[in-house]
Length: 222
Image (spheres, rainbow, N blue to C red):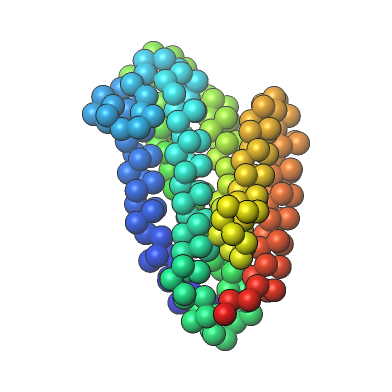
């Protein structure tokens, strides 16, 4: 299991490094710098209220979504395109165990990387002299909600990459479905999200993981 976990970490390190660099550029810009204004979707800095003004709460989910999708496809479709599934599944582990390790590593990396810019920006906002206004941790709520909800895109991309259907047929349906669900969750009022939206995200994640385990067990890898 340890060897498999390290394998997953080595294979996605480039995607993780690119996402961390993009996150860091976002945080530096919203702190007031204009060094990375040339980057895609980069806000122009802010003198407003952290997390509420300046574009962090809208750009962070976009970066997280692209990161989650790239990570999911890299861990599933890439194995199929390189023909490494047969070698991977010859390990003395059940298929479901192998795929659950892959999912655990991918989800942990996503959540860790996506939470770092929120914590870094919040740490900057807490320190006095950085902005003219108070700071409360409740201001970070929207960023945390979108971060957890975007985990659905990772699982949807993983399932789409694992399914043996054709790309122009029904293969992308899990990813498209999770994207639509994410848009609906974003429309839900923030007041009841932790009581309704968050349990719903956990339920959908469980259903996607169960579907991934089923496809991993019945798929013909030859």
